[in-house]
Image 1: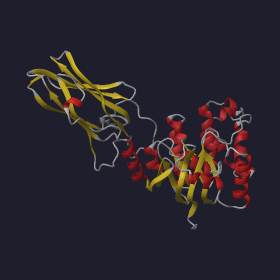
Image 2: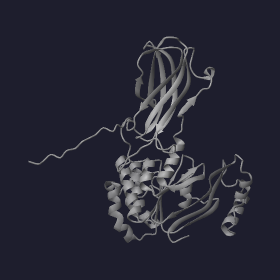
Image 3: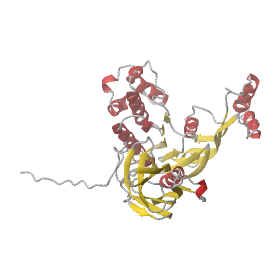
Image 4: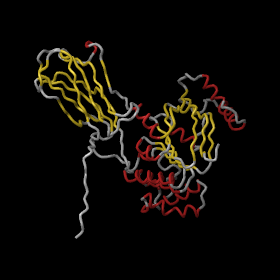
Length: 423
């Protein structure tokens, strides 16, 4: 391990046997303990499970993970739920042991894996601050020097001498993060702290982590589903998928690869034969696709991206007066808009349609589109429900607030401020 490396992980794996604590046998559990703790050999349970790799009785939470983190680096671990992110952080925090592999590290570690990790419910906020400090190996004088700063950051000064079991979840996590961030660990491990708390608290958390990494030279391991926070805070990122490492590199590149993968959803559908296509005796669909205007196919769809819906359908009725409507919904089925074509008479044959949603219009979130066909501006002919679905990611240039932007739309209307000369 080089002098610049503060964490080094080699061939790390974690295996669980589903529905069973331990191996299910006292003799085998004692054997595992003897082999791994006394003889320092490979876990015999691991060898057996590896031979039964396809068995449904076993789950690889992590498999053959290798990476290193430099001193003073902010390093992100991203991936879908169940990818193994929290398991990895628990191993690095020494909460659980790996099945196989080596973890090397140096320095004091403070982990915020859950709300109030290390807190005792019966103790007051004041007592828990000192307790956590002692866990980190800090002296009473060191803790006392940081005490006022911790309390001010947490915003719970009025309740500092109240048992934390009486705190709300927001107060609890405020104090927990304040303690974790201010007691000067060499390595700060943070798992989804931004999933709780209000926008102002999230802003303070990110600002403190940024300060700890860039100004104070402390190492941060960060897990979050807020990709904007990841790209702004972290130097590098690692993408996990079902317990294996997909890629590791600069955070912006890894985030783009991750978003590009999860954003596919259902951007297009195509039917080769009319008899297999959705529709009826009047209209049958041929194709529908949503085309994002972006620099490359791996770039994510974000609030700046222009989206074009193109569709084709067969019309089987001669001289039909037809209007086509585009309905955009959130994933919770709230309609964002309903736009339609002009009334027009069409002959039999293939008809193409197109609608463009400009960039800097939609807010971040998940959406789907449905298409309605109406005869004589009043009679529904066919409704193609949820034909495409997509995610829009956040993007904020030179903005250091990461709370949720309000509203379903986010138009780029100019807001102009002018100084008024004093009298």
